[in-house]
Figure 1 (spheres, rainbow, N blue to C red):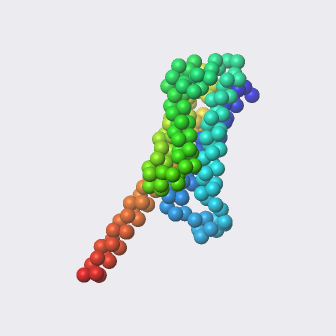
Figure 2 (cartoon, rainbow, N blue to C red):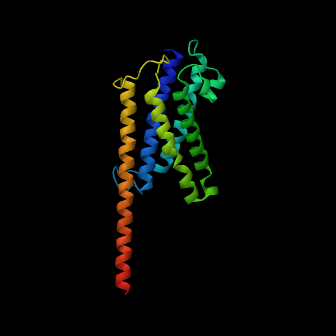
Figure 3 (tube, helix red, strand yellow):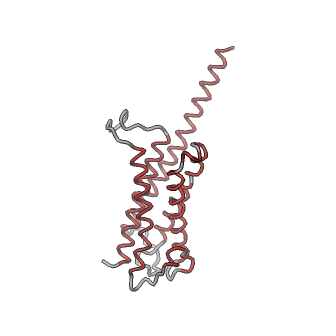
Length: 198
């Protein structure tokens, strides 16, 4: 296994963990409780959500660093930190780096969420969606062998990324609809309470 192969594999694992993290975050946002609901087990979902975030950040950071040990990739430290001038696929790699920096921002601000207050922290935490978009674009468009080959949309690695993308997109749509339905119910109850008060 070459350093390029290892970097590609680490990137896929990071994307899978990031996908799980986003899905857990969406469940937490609707008050999902695994003790009262399926699987009826004492699982600290918030703690698991935090640790998947830390793990995804660590792996996403390691993903480009491994390329420094490749004899053929030609990446230097500057190409890893600011890949605008990287020797291969600079646009795709810059998008990936932006995703990494956004995840780092989300993790750091989450660690200090009490300082920001819940409402402000929640607004800052929406950067995870931008990070997910950046990671999906990077993962779909980058040639895992760094040879600038055209995208093979049916390649097993790309299919994995596509499935992760569909899971996040579908669950996000469900979350938005669920939130709107809850808001309509709240307004209906408020209206009913006002009519009874008269």
